[in-house]
Length: 108
Image (tube, rainbow, N blue to C red):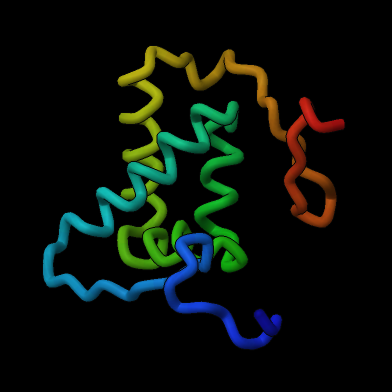
């Protein structure tokens, strides 16, 4: 099969789908999913907020623009509380460089 001509029946082909919704909770649920995943990866509350404020992370940044910084901070605190993670004492598994680039310590 030619490289530029993917087979539409190939189950490994990536497909993006835009979903429009009028449900105001959709953005909150999306943000909660991002937060939960990053918490499980070892991100601290500060690192999470940096992800949401960075336009390079399209989904989290969209939630940040719609919910505002206070809304995102509240969601982060709620998710940390659900998992009994002390936000002030947790050692970050993520390092943030001077350029803002984030790396996982376990990969170094």
